[in-house]
Amino acid sequence: MKTAHGYSRLVGFSDGVVAIAITLLILPLVDAASDYDGDTGKFVTEHLGKLLVFLLSFAVIGNFWLVHHRTFERITSYNSGLLWANLLWLLSIVFLPFPTALLASSPSGDRATYVLYVGTMVVTTAAEVLMQAIIVRHPDLQAEEARGTLRIRPYLTPLVIMLVALLIAALFPAIGLWGLALFALSGPIEGAIARRKKATS
Image (tube, rainbow, N blue to C red):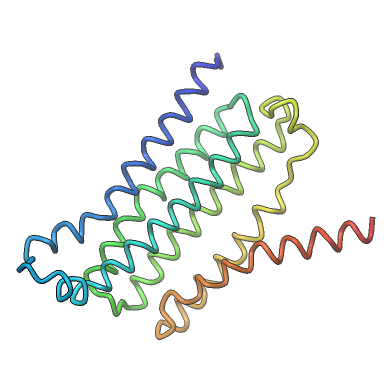
């Protein structure tokens, strides 16, 4: 039986898990602070890699949460498929601090670490696509004002870009995580697709 209380628990649980995961990202820097000798400038310089990795992963999880928030703002109910897809999404979010810690331990990184890091993000993005597909397929889950307006395509573009970033990380480890910069193209690409579709309709 689906209830409004059950939906609130689903959203609340998801937000709580994300909050814990995003907090765990700071732990490598907290551990490093045990060696602090009073020279803040020196400490920041020595641990700049850890700080940059923390900021990157914080931005990544923050962006994923924003997408998740927008998705669940457009629905008012759930089904078992959405529950399982959401759990897959949460699994990838909870896992991300692990490859983040690996990167923080070795800022230069290696192929396996880069692939694990970006691969985790691929799973998160794929879970977002799966959730959206379930929502589009089941209009009864959608908020009344959102029905007929939801599409899967806007969620596919980030997935394709993330897969390209994963391929770059696997084939060209010297580039490191710079392939993730392609994610900035997601908005312009979606805008171009929308304009082309509008022009041909």
